[in-house]
Length: 169
Image (cartoon, rainbow, N blue to C red; front, top):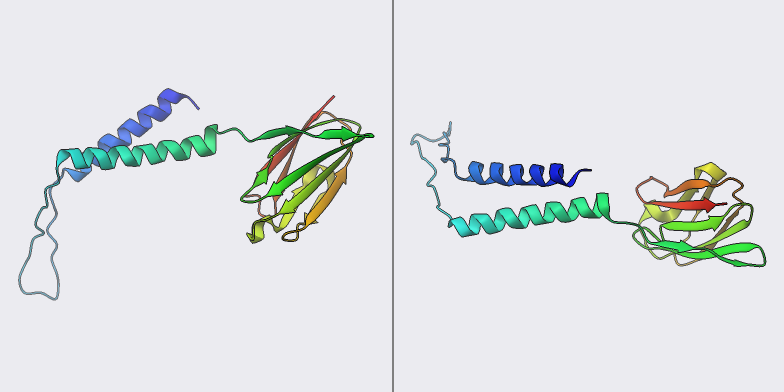
């Protein structure tokens, strides 16, 4: 995504919020009340409005960075006697989330699930037709042999958490 578009959108949102908060209070009528009351406007200092707006924009920027621009941790599988192995921690996601392996060799991934989230109780490798339960606080080993270079995703049972196996020639 273009940084100018994001910055322009955030700036426009900030201006909109600032102008909307500077508007007049709208009177509210009540069907059950004989007297009509009007809300009393409470003036807030301009500096406070600016701080709240900048804080909100900062949080929006942090979320955009987290979901769109942050890079997953990458780790290359260690090869021993023709078996490429790697330990993966399952705690709020997969760590590492990007695994680099060589094609044509057996891959052994050892998943250790620490997170009690039920979504992380299963891992799916659709390209290798693997669906494996991950018991809590236990190591679960998954083995497969990738024959073609490429990127092969893996997800939790609900596809909320993702990882990827990058197979190199």
